[in-house]
Image (cartoon, rainbow, N blue to C red):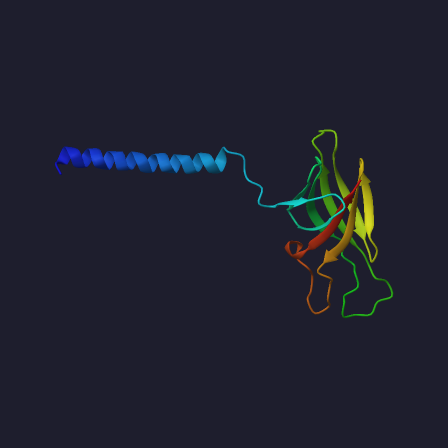
Length: 151
């Protein structure tokens, strides 16, 4: 190959690499992000959600995101207590209606807890893991909350 041909080849290859890099940058910054943390669910079904995940109710404009779990005073599973304790779950709830957006705090004990959000009733059925004295404090990232949504 002559020097001119080599230069043209390397220039074309460099141009291809630049186009590839620009495509990757555009795809990761400008295009809408996929929702790997979105959980599909249906009305009247239970589903599990972790901190930072959100759920979209099929056929409805309702979305629920688990923001945090706090005030976990539930009696450790390996201890006998006079009171079972409770835990508070904070959810961000929204619909396609911009005026229909809010935060729900649901305090859960040994029975199902539910609150209304517009025409929906959102219930906390279970918060896992259950505390244990040998385990120490539960990290936010370890919590899994079982919810249900009804009309």
